[in-house]
Length: 507
Ligand code: UN1
Image 1: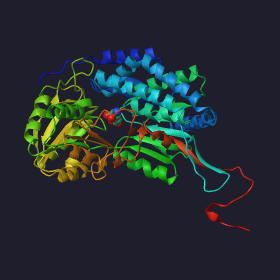
Image 2: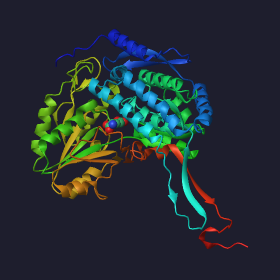
Image 3: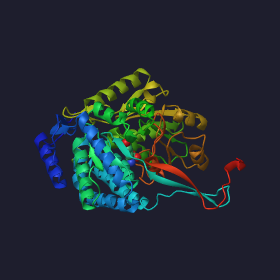
Image 4: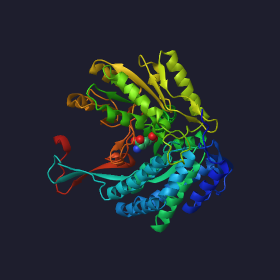
């Protein structure tokens, strides 16, 4: 209906250039081809960025391998100083980087700032961690022996990231990898090269300011071919890849075939169970942010609600009322809550999912329609489904929320877990038995399980990731750092005897 008021494309290019300029980044490095940075705000081009050749990827891995030889013996707290400097630069350029996130990924300002805050937080976490890479000491079964473990740097980490968290996911991996003594080659999404250039520039400056070795971090730009060059290279010890389950299915066997390590953060199909005792005011707020926020383009976006039959109608109409107040529009406008989909393909996928849902007996309660004819803006869709049919069990990376009813709590848990993905989950209830059951071994099967809050917006302090087709990886806080290091078990004999383990006698 109402046309959107959007900025002019040349204004957006100017804003991108200005933000890059303040960060000190220029897109002028030589390359054989070009990628074009685009903005979903108007669906138009921003700037050309040089693409990296396969030879360029090889050179970046070579440089990272050389830098690793020096970095791995740099004391971890000294490595932490480089990450501390990166954090300071992120604080200083928070607005600039958030502006680029808004321009390239289409996130509203508050969410773009939140994403940069996540980077600052993980840098702080990693600096602390640089003094806490603890191994254990175990009781040896032999007299005069000490048994312990040491954590050593792993090697070159290849980071493959997606458009929807173009900077935070890089920082979770890179800040932790660097304090662990690893070096990094990053392949960002081809949809978000400018934010990647900005991050690389800030880290390069942090390295210069703290005398860290050259080649510690490189960014390579390109499509799947460039990703493959990283994935297939035996010098890349760990491939940390965030994206679709299809991408993970392509990457994991290749890395496994060369006995490399993989850390996968793939699709989610996150649900909330809403029990009969739930505080519905709170549930509606939690559901609406998780389902419609970021225009449904988080891996943690809530895509399903499984609500008790006694409250499902009231809950649905309250969500509908909230959805009708959501402002869809330019993410640069202060009042906007829902920005654009990333591109036409995302819109087509959303439309196809809604058609399938209708064919499966679903009712679109509200939303799903395109707003304006510039860019790909949509109203978040709310859909009542009679059953959890195949379309509900797929991840559609757009704001579609399916609502289903249950009668017995066991059925709610079964329905909750009956999808191939296992990233994030939530229950809204004031019944302690239900809440605890949801968190128990026979409750939610996801990597993240929350009580009385939505599925998205995890804090960096916890380990982030999920099970089943989500890929099993854990990033960010808690002990996720262990994936970025190798463990050596050490036995030291400080006696003058040579007792063998298990009581074995030999000669
Ligand atoms: C993602 O969408 O890839 O929990 C990551 C969240 C954010 C990270 C999402 N902290 O929603």
